[in-house]
Image (cartoon, rainbow, N blue to C red; front, side, top):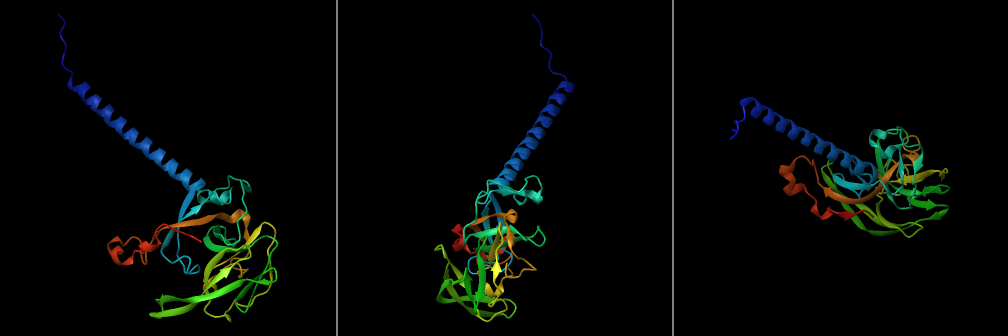
Length: 260
């Protein structure tokens, strides 16, 4: 009868070492797969953004977090992380619609993310006269719908700003704020939107640096488009990292609200 020898201490240690190395490798592979999936989703499907300024009030507030559809306008270099120049021009391109809220790279530096509403399409003539938006010589209809109450941390007071519904030529409607019709950019030149470019404006008309400011923003080239803002998934009035104050700062009524 043959005898079975008990495993040596050396073989026992080797088995444990191999098991540990196998576990580490499995963890690394899982992390690589997870990161790859996240990068694919971020590049080709949806990318999260947050709103740092008040230029799109009342549609978007400071502290809103939203998903931007990368599929909506096709793909270009700015669809990729760090704007890697791996996609020539734009592929699978679909033209933005008038009224879309779009994220794009600032044309004057090609790195800063901006978000505005697409007002003008290629070939359009855009002008603001006495606060009223004009497209191709026709005044865009707007209707007063009360006031928007806004707290100003600079003055420590609440301000009441006239709020309107603006109806674009294609029937798309959205809210805008217009504190005065005699502001800095309430009477402008006529802007001729070049081919392959778009004209964006903020909904907070008197507090938006947008395509009206040619030296700062100007016309938006189609290759600078990143995607269309689709839905707000989170909103906080303050720092998102101060989770201990969420009880008083979360704006849960804005969670998963579609962006019009």
